[in-house]
Length: 291
Image (cartoon, rainbow, N blue to C red; front, side, top):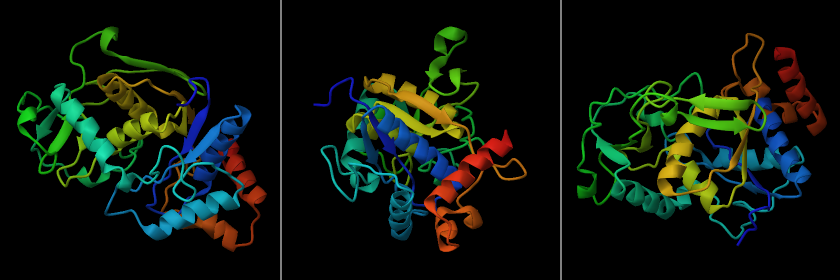
């Protein structure tokens, strides 16, 4: 068993495109925090999205991170005690959590049509966050009649009511105190898709707990997701890790970088002959200039 005081951090990229300099900055910070704490760094391949994930992107992200000088001691390429480290190989873990949530009355089946359903397996962000669900299926209580999750969407029933007692509060190690109110800042969120794919929120919570992650370093666009994940952790009886959200690297117009920004991808910069130090300098400089 891992000692409660042992630092365990993780890199958790999704193979849906090439990593860009914003990823370089965030992952470098994550790696350095693991080094500073004398801890362990894990690489996890978050390839749940079957429409967008590609093996070539998974290979590229590992190669580019190694090229930057980031080292990990557990991952898809080197194994470890808490594997497998590729999410598409961890279905059994997610099904166990789904059953616990179903039996505990925390989730319900939803038959509403969602245009943005394909995005739910990927990490959301401020610009394409999951819309607040209006609650049409919220009063359904037939969850235990389902033996498998496929065929309907499954939503987590967030706390109802008013006042600070239902707010989800946490102290981010970089950005300070944060507080989000369910039903106002986010609604009943997806934990499993009708096409039988576990959603991002559930998979991340399950994997961070199973891999004994003590600190999550990621972009500030996932602050609201942290509140959702804390609710899931409470429902599943899990200990929440600490969180360190990094400010985003944005382009000249103030828009956050996306994987479609090939010109700013680590791979493109490598091919132009830039050194790892030059790429990291560019990442940190871009962030500083945006402030």
